[in-house]
Image (cartoon, rainbow, N blue to C red):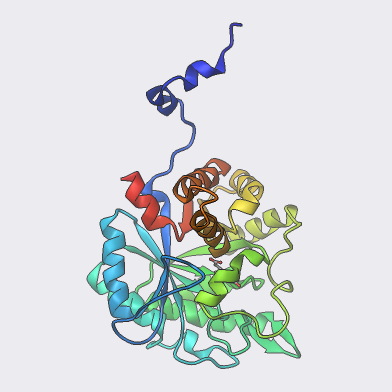
Length: 320
Ligand code: PBG
């Protein structure tokens, strides 16, 4: 036998030399939930180890995140009140807007991304404005663009539209530019599936749809070609980074998007992926830490450059 692949697996240092993918703390983006109040750090039952923060506690949390070497956070807001059009989503004194300013004032070097979507701000829980029982695409674009501009005005480095309306990247790009925010980037959730893996997040962000589901705007889990179509459209509309979401059930999609796009690719290791590992670990059925690291490296191997993950802090402690 001339060829023995095991020679390259013989010792740890040899394995390290020939390792094809790497996971670095610099790849990680940490999702955070912000709500009104002060001194708030409410545990999220469906996401053990994750919290809803008021702005002041959030700044302390971001300081800790930064000290671990994690370069970036993405913010989700729980507004003081909801209405049919999600008007608190673009208020200059809204939860996310205030949180962004506070973070940038105290920790200017952390890269701040904001989620742009209406589901947390509408009383019906859909990601856009409802007309005749349906989410109205074009009426929603205006509000999304306003929300994006208000986040930029507060100091966001990137806005990340997660609503899946057609044409939102172009609409947001135009309004950002018209308001002098040419430098603010767009991380597009270009390929976002209508996934049941978002369950724990909907509890954390209080954004479950009050009727129907999101299948009329988020993608069908059975489709792969369509992911490329969405990627190409968002590239043409001016997205700076393309995101695939969820991550683990869609590694094939991450790979295809990586091959079709010249842009950096981000993957969102979503709430359900996190919660399942935590739950199985609690039951003693798996080693949660090892499964976490294996999951994250799989997402890198599939082709992601960046990973949004609730595991960011835990992973950072092991990587640095
Ligand atoms: C919607 C949004 C969702 C997530 C991120 N942005 C939920 C949804 O589309 O229903 C899910 C993230 C996760 O599950 O961790 N604005």
